[in-house]
Structures are given as C-alpha cells and as structure tokens.
Amino acid sequence: MNETDKLLISISDKINKLIGRNDALNKEIGIYRRKAEELENTIKDKNIEIGNLTEQNNILKISKAVRTEEGAVDTKKRINELVREIDKCIGLLNK
Image 1 (cartoon, helix red, strand yellow):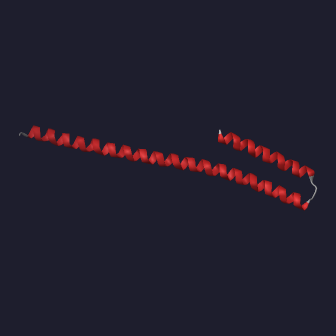
Image 2 (cartoon, one colour):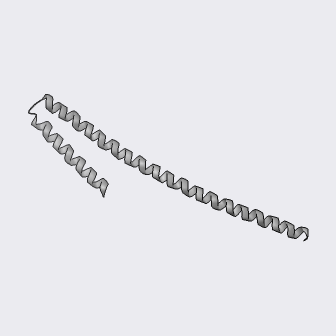
Image 3 (cartoon, rainbow, N blue to C red):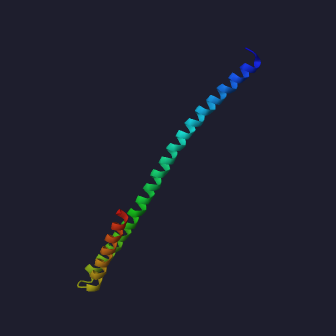
C-alpha cells in the first residue's frame, strides 16, 4: 500500500469520526433544546400561578375589608366582579 492510499484511509477514518461526533453533538443539542422548552413552559406556568395568586391575594384583602366594614355592599360587588374576571382569564388560558 502506498502513501497516497494510507493518507486516503486516514482521511476517511477522520471524516467518519467527525460525522459520528457531529451526530452525537446534534443529539445533545436536541436534548438541550427540549430542556429549554420545558423550562420555558415551567416559567409560563409559574407566571400564570403568580398571577392567580396575586388575584387571590387581592380578593383576600378585599374580603378582609368587608369583614371590618360589615354590610359594605359595594365591596361585595367588587369581589364578585373580580371573581368573574378571574374566571374569564382562566377560561382564556385553558383554550
């Protein structure tokens, strides 16, 4: 076998190794992309949860005000409006 043949075989081996490494790296990239997508979804879910908890907190504050001001019809109406608004938002999020 002459030098040219040895070089061609060596280059061919190196190309095959590079192809294998490229495939492995592409699989790894796919894994990281899926993880990033999962994390983005988690962030979205947590943001929604934060929004819901903020609304619940507001409702609790208003309900506390109602307890201290018994018979405050306007406050009760506002609570009902907020609850309906929350229900609409949840309905939109679930679509």
